[in-house]
Every structure is written in C-alpha cells, then in structure tokens.
Length: 168
Image 1 (tube, rainbow, N blue to C red):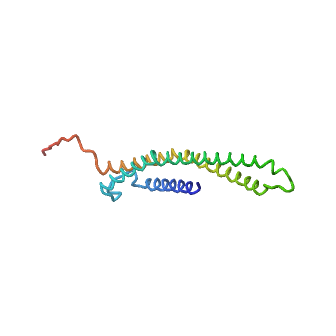
Image 2: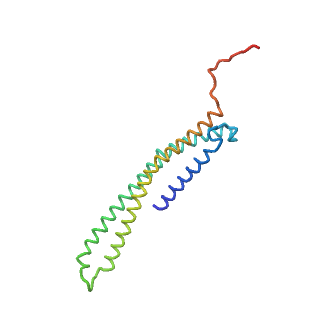
Image 3: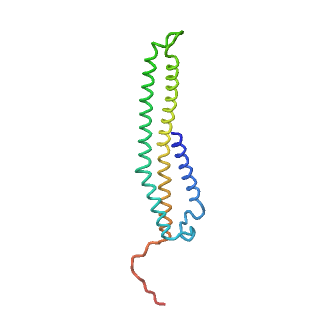
C-alpha cells in the first residue's frame, strides 16, 4: 500500500513537472521549429499523449480502484475475524492468575490494532485516488491538447484545394 502511494505521488509529481515545462515561452507557440521536432515526432507525441490518456481512463484508474476496494474488503473481513477470535478468548482471559491464553489474547489485540491502522491507511489511499482522479484527467487532457496544437502548427490545414493565379 505504501509503495502504491509513493508510486501515485511520483506520477503526480511527474505530471506537475511536465505541466511546468509545458508552460515555457514556446509552449503555446507549439511550432515544430521551436521544439526542434520533426512532424513524425510531433505525430508520435500526440499519439502517445492520447494513448496515455486512454490507458489511464480505461485501465489504470479502474484497476487501481478495484484493487483498493478488494484490499479494503479483505482488511475488513480480517478485522471481523480477529475481533471474533478476541471475543472467544474473553472467557479464558478473565482470570488474573494462571491465564492460559494471555500471550495469544495479547497477540490478537495487537493484530486488531495493526489491522485497524492498515484499514485506515487503505481508506485514505482510496479517498486520495478519487480526489486526484480529476486532476490527472485534466493533466492528460492538457498533454493531448498541447500535442495536438504542436502538430496542427507544424501542419497548417490546407486551403479549399483551389489554386489562385495572380497576374502582375
């Protein structure tokens, strides 16, 4: 869970860096000459941006949400099991002297605390995933838009196909 959170934050940082780079003096110009890129490179850049947007929307985000929901459900089930086990130990742990299940009952209590913290962390990561989703969508759409602008600037649209002859 922690590595997934780190991965998510690193990806967000990369998006922020790319957005900062995209806001340089030639970002709105989007001409191939300013960027030093060929038309093929610009076309590939646009295709990659569009592909990354679709992959995030259709694969990465839904898979991450499903994975988090599954982990949360498993943590909740494990917590219920540990609490049931702790209740089963209660009749045996009431004795002050000669408690036969003292160590086991204490281990179960610690496992309950550990699982409660894990569940709390999972719920926070799940909420963060939903909170950052719209930001990622906007960043992906901006990347596609900038790539399309660069490509359009490198390939200005042709006229209506007619040729005008001017005599001087």
